[in-house]
Image (cartoon, rainbow, N blue to C red; front, side):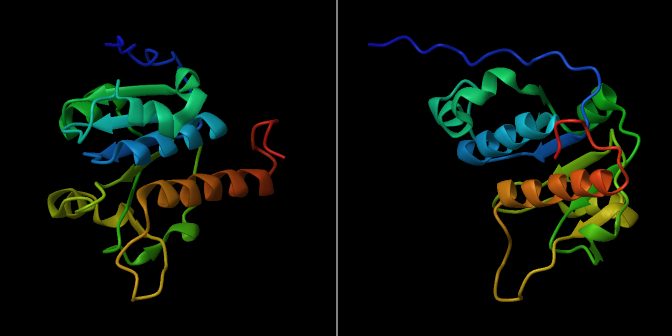
Length: 174
């Protein structure tokens, strides 16, 4: 029997460009994919329990390939624990129930982007708590939702696009 090696511990990072929160994610491949996008863009990934997988699972590693060791990430027990650990300045929640398009927001470095679980999205209590910060990615009505890793990539890169337009993007963003 082969011994499983745990994935690398979270990388220390005091000032990520954005904080990316996966609220109760269920699918390891999606967490791995979002993690890879975070490495590519200088974001920190936060995973809010309960998780539908173990963070040392081969599936997370496979989806993140060899990038997971470079990822700044943290697991928290629940929403309140996230708020204590992160103390976000500005939150943006993404939901099909939102009415405000994601591209109308002027993102700022340090913003927190929050995505729901694959099967249920963000819970109503959380959307009701932050009604002015709920954003939507427009899509045709025949599609129930986008994959969470696609939604994260779309919105993270929108923030970077905005910063490039005003010449405040990181040097590597070209």
